[in-house]
Length: 477
View (tube, rainbow, N blue to C red):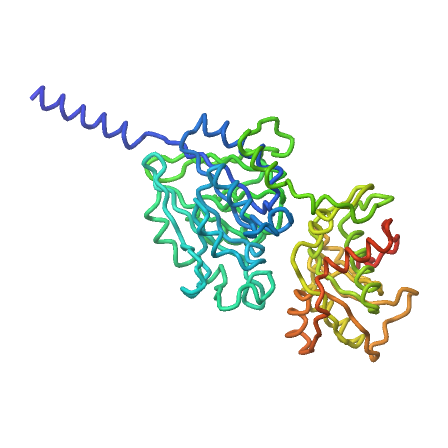
């Protein structure tokens, strides 16, 4: 009896040790890198340091890995540099962001990628050659870490990219898809959503689906911090764009469920840690004299993105003899420009999309309706204009100072826009693709890239500076 009792006690003890043991899973997460390859030596150094402590480190991206750096975007295989660097750092998986569709090279890039592309709300024909899985389970030290991916879908039924870039590809709304994967989560010790749908939508997901343990978010470039509270028990992380920060996430798993979760936000650009091999790769990719040629000079710095966007609008109007210019907020991809030399790289970083310049003939009423509809009641989404002034009224009760109540369009001398007159409006092909269904109007391509208009304008002037004209006046109402 004593032997049996001893054996039974030993079995119980071993069982309690095995099933009661806590295990930590460590993740390094990025989002919206936008091809900032210059930060990769530091990112790789951070990954090396974490991997030395946690050999089973997972490295994940929430999408928008590309678009914004001509060194990467205009490479002979577009975006190969960012993929090669992600391979070297050791990324395990990424979801797709809207800007990952910007250039028709996604399929060949996947062949060069040593990491997975995970996105559950996309369906593409076989001939598209997109090797995408909706979910994937990673075995991390015996723990099953399940990952689901989602990309943002706009009111037109596709991510925010030119419709031609996603022709033949079908997208489902993230909210319609996510409900299918609760059973998937039961197969996993931890469930992670790689989300490129924006912070507000991530919060909604957390409140509706608490079976998700962690949301690694992107798209809105929302800088969160370690103080971010759990949302319905779900940890949400996200960083600003261009690798200013990365996130070290720790999940503690006990008896097949996550019992603790925390995030540490790590500055990337100012890190003293560097991977020398990755640094050499970045130097190699950057060796291109074409992008270092000086186009013009800025005699004063452009401190805000809107100043650059208004300058872009002025350039489009002058180079095409247009009357009004409309550019999407986000059409300029850098936040500022210092005084001094402006290089080809600066211009193509400002306008990296290869959009064509487009001419439209719209009445004042159509222009006003377009701004109110396209703006979707949001200052963030409101297009920026040139040749006129847009007066936007913000709801003073809105804590985020983003919700618009109404929009008026005025001439530069303060008069009301003639609603019956037809104006020559210049925009880019992306905005035109959105205008067409909203207004049921036609447009003509000018057969020139918008970046070429910028280059021509800058070379002609030689020296440029912020015009001092505020084309967007915001008041509270």
